[in-house]
Image (cartoon, rainbow, N blue to C red; front, side, top):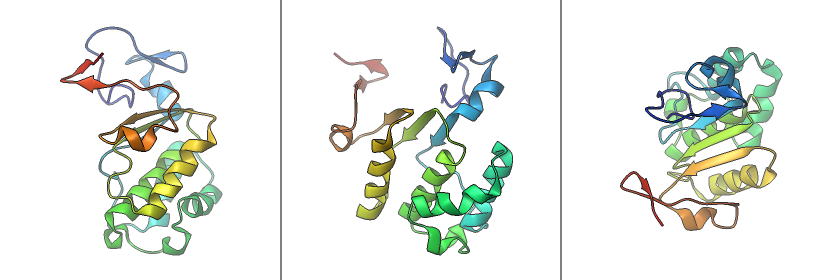
Length: 161
């Protein structure tokens, strides 16, 4: 939550792209894509409307919305309300939202939760692309083992040896 700029650090220093938090949070946010455990989408809106809203908020051209849906395998469902989506489809939409503005830092909280094999393949493809820093919080470290360049295990809120 600290890296997502929604929680202030209680000790130490945190900077994203040279912007120290919390003072530089406004400048750091455009560099961060965040997929929470819940999809953080609006269920009453369609997939296209959801991504259109976030495109407007990020100052991203609306032409990126269609390709973003296609990238996560939802191009045929753009006009469907998110309330009709399965958990995995909503999670894929959340991934499209998080990538829409081309962030340098991608934060993923339990990103495999609810994903079917197609969704997991989409996630694996995104992670294999490279070109950005990805931080994953997961209870499935073995799923990410071949993709990670480093890993840290945390137990009871502390780094475990």
